[in-house]
Length: 328
Image (cartoon, rainbow, N blue to C red; front, side):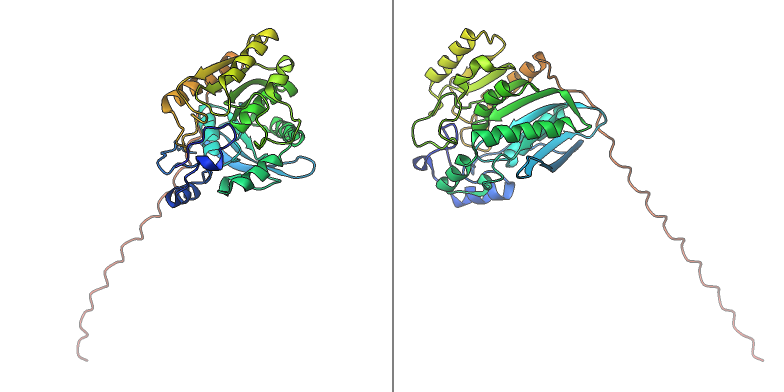
């Protein structure tokens, strides 16, 4: 079992990987580095949805992105889902399906596609290499490409786009809300707010951190943080609150779940806190709706009609009774 108490993963001394956990994670498509063998992850059916992995043009490298949307006519508001350091594994795909069942188009870009797939790796240093290779310039550029792609789709309402990010992706949410005017609202789940201590693997040196761009926010952001996060001290959270107030970002806010750990929404980890996760999910949805990103109700497409069973073949006529031939 692994208890992840840090913003973008954990450290080797936190770990106790079991063969049972590895096997369960690999079988279910979850990140093997963080999966708890005792977890019972939420699984969301794709019935009534359309799901696919698309290739988003980025200029230098096609970027895979998982898309889930209602199987219904019309245009639906969009939520860009930004993953943890473990990439687009089953937890992230399930979040997309949860949003789609509510009436959103959810798209989860694979920002680490150039470097590798961290979800299948149990080596801490290899994950560090992959995550560290995703520079701020690349991630922001890829996010812009994802926005361009989704706005062109006939099923997406390009005037209603939000973003939700988790852990590593939580920090990206703040930056995205400051950079892209297409984004109308954001939800940052326990993303780091300030530069970490030396040695942590959070991208290129000199990258921008949320506390530095508060006055540039173009969209309101709700921050959902944990009181027992070993990597994000409450002093950082309080500093962010003060900065938001000073910048008169009155629509943005931060909520702290005092008894929860980092990753409290990740239902495949041992840090999962069902009560806090459910409450924060409801807070996010309410915040989205308040800021113009309510889901669109839809009637799922009816299932295809079952083919009519083939008519049973007519029973063979009984053979005619043979009359004895009279002796000539």
